[in-house]
Each structure stands twice: as C-alpha cells, then as structure tokens.
Image (cartoon, rainbow, N blue to C red; front, top):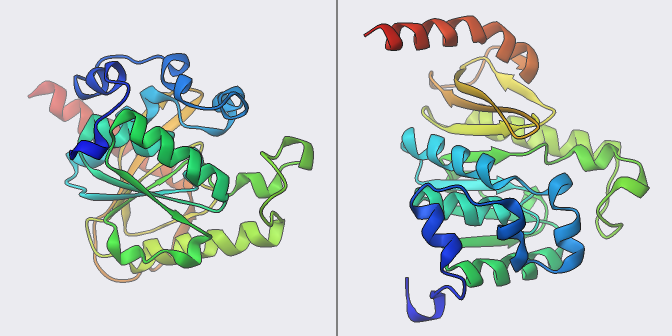
Length: 241
C-alpha cells in the first residue's frame, strides 16, 4: 500500500483483516446519505462479502470480478478480508466515483471499470461474483436505483447470455459465487463447492471441474438442488475423519 492509498478510516480495515465482525451501519458511514439509505437493498452485506472473498481465496482465485459493483462495497470488503485483487464493473459513472472514494477511505486495493459487460475482458479474471446483477432490469421503475442506464427485459437476457458465455468458455478451475442467484444457467461442467445461508438468501460457490465447453446448462436453483446431496455427503465424510 503506497502513501496515497493509506486509509482514512483504519478501524474497519483492521477488523476485516482480522476476520472480525463489522456492522453494515458502521461500514456504510463512508457513503453519501442517498447511497447509504439503499444499502440493504442494493449492496452486498459485509458478512456476505467477507465469506465470499474467503471462499474464492480458498480455491486459489487471484483476480475477482464483481459484476455490477455499484458503490464498491463487495470489492472493498472482499479485498480487505482476503487480500485478493478485486475489480468491479459498473454502468453508473457517479457510483464509480463514490466507489473510488470509499476504496481510498478504507485503503483497499480495488479498481473499477465503467461501462457495460462489453468493456470487460473475462480472460483477466479467474473468479466472478454475481449478486443478482441483472435483476434491476425487471424491477418496476419506482424500485430501480435510478433511471440513468438502459434497463429492460431485452437487456436482462442480453447480459445473462454474456455471463453464460464467459462461464462456458472459461478455463478449468474458474470459480464464481452467487448471492440471490444471477438469473442464468450453470454450465454442466461446474460443481457446487459450498452453499450456506447468509444474509437474506443463499451464498453459493461454483467451480469449473472439467475443461472444454459444457454439454448442457441448468438453471442455478435446479443445479443447486441436484448437487446438494453430494455436497452434504462430502461434508459428512470430512466431519467423520
């Protein structure tokens, strides 16, 4: 960390480095009021981001992409908790500015790309984080964050197809975490590695176990249900050792 990256707030980074609990209300003080008010709806809870970051690090991930990074909360927490490089892609320019300010305040090593998924080179990353990033396209306008970007059902399907393409063409051992799902399908050569109730939904960790293109795709919830018995059996074997 160079001099320009020295955190203004040292208590939160210190706690995250140590794996200690940080309340969302405490973390969110770095944000403007309008961003803080919608934190529970739009931004990843601290506990969820800590867990996801450490799960990805545990599988050897080095470069993580947060799709739809918003105000940067996941990127900051995951970086400080795991030490991994985290990048966010966000289509709202003013949220990029807010995320950069928060990142500087906490001294995190996170960076942000401004634009839609077309600006991303997925080969730069070996892990992805997906917190229902496209669901806002289907919200009523009164429930959307703002009207700045193009939001539509067509855009929803377009972005889903891009992420599915990324996952299908990714090298073996690529991993990703979903929280509140991502709306798309899981390629058949990905295995459910971990699943845990966190925050207001399930947190799931997936890893590509076989190289090449998938022969089939399955909706995430169906894939998770199909693989849950094996995951439970694996946990039982570990417990008994």
